[in-house]
Length: 394
Image (cartoon, rainbow, N blue to C red; front, side):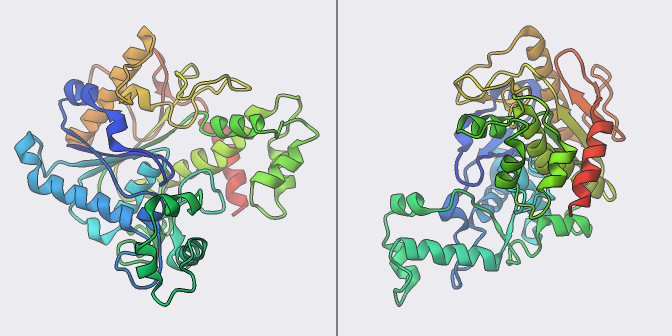
């Protein structure tokens, strides 16, 4: 059994966008794709409503309970459930690892590009916020829709049209911790070893940040040696540390977008994923990967200002037909897709992705996944250097 939680920054996405027939048939697994409440409907917080700040996470647990109760009728094993997700879905897996209410609801975890040690001051990756901060955001939303001064703000909010609520919600949404469902920030829980003891398959893409960097460059923020300090100061909320970032990631040419992408990717994904892997591996078996197909098919239309390589979410077409569209992959990419599905499915079935027919995946290395080139990642040492830098920033 694989239960899939979609990404989308906790504001967008749908389970139906992930056609899992290839994973189900080739991997011989039952796959359930889940919808959960998003945006203000999923993570609005105020004092009073039970579950405030975690409605979306509660939906995910409800889906897991449904699987446990009834999946046998569909041929699934309710006692062999892998909870998997990407981006906000991957971070949701982290939250469920840290949630006491999820005890016994899943037996393994797959976390794709949603490291458990995400932080709100590194905003390109998902993270959680304290309930107090979520309630402040909830108060602001109430005021925007005319319910700030109402005697019963909740009754007032229930009369507001949903489209109006969504129109004024913050772009960034986060689950709330210090709540009954999520007592601790997942980063703190993983650091302290307070999480469900299940095997984990964990990874990220080689060029996580390039998509964001390309969008920002195209929005009118070119990255050149002259503009780079201002770009860093604008998009990275590390007060007083922009100079250190510019020094660590110098831009020497007029087309510095890939350097910008490397900063986004290392700070928000690659280094937090490495840290998450080390923390989890102190208690449970962990297999780490890096998706590194530099010619992965684009997920959006248009021509980016520089080659994106393997950006955020680029591994998804290798596991699913997105939007019910068949994959546009080369023969070598098809082979990689089959190999990845084999790894994921074997992990789901028996907690070990390995088989004699595939390159051996050691728990002591990061497996680089690229067409016809599945080997321990060559970027580990470089990333280790940059991760040491990000760790010094706190």
